[in-house]
Length: 345
Ligand code: ATP
Ligand code: MG
Ligand code: MG
Ligand code: MG
Image (cartoon, rainbow, N blue to C red):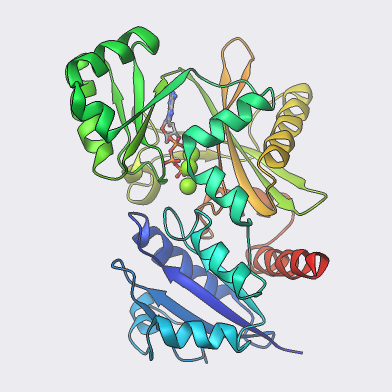
């Protein structure tokens, strides 16, 4: 029987445009003999619109976007009436990757692709995520955090504290975001002050991390109770670090798949990635990002509960190398969503 798939994309998030790129690729790859696809566009200001059932793959994202009807009430009633057998929240960042939409779908008892409420929200907040990783005994860079109110109260004292606790270089990031949006690398108090202002544009909480010189290694994980790792890949940015432009605009970052690692390094990385997956109670999928230090030490940087997902993104490329092609990968993620839902009932 054909499955009815609701595809949520766009989103009220600074990663809105990343989701548009992903949605176009996913709709193009979905087998329309197996799925009735109902795109649901969420605008940057949070308006929901249900598109017409997809009859043919679209060539531009606008074709999906502007054929819509109804608003959020319409989509919610469709969800509540069981119009969709499964929902794919193809959303990155706040209001989509952070457990909010997942909570909505839980309440409506609709199976959905990807992580549940807890893993999504804990994985979105880099401070909470790192605290949980620390509990699980995973090694990481040093970090601290500051709220906008704490920063506003005494910026000079804030800079002095960060200089003393973290030192240079440091990375300043909005606590809840992705795609490197709002992230800066700082070498001095002056740069730090600018970076803090920039990061506070996106979040009321900012994380400040010790900057390391290391290889950047990533692995995909698929599964619910029995998660499995993909091939491991390496990112070699041409610039100072892997920023938004390097991710989505320039094509000079090298993705090396498989990464050149010893068997022992691979085994350790897989074991740490699975530990990270379990520590946040993840399900469905994640991409786990690590730093491999010159000393051989593996530090976890983060997990992404809905990683970049175009056919040229790291997560699908790692699975392709593992023998899972893009359309198959999407179907596998949908199957895992249904499996989790069924097991919970
Ligand atoms: P995404 O979700 O797209 O993977 P993100 O916005 O969650 O990205 P991070 O992965 O934490 O951000 O950081 C983005 C990039 O910045 C990393 O890939 C790396 O190049 C660099 N970077 C981040 N933190 C550090 C650090 N502590 N030391 C050195 N480099 C870092
Ligand atoms: Mg991230
Ligand atoms: Mg991300
Ligand atoms: Mg990352």
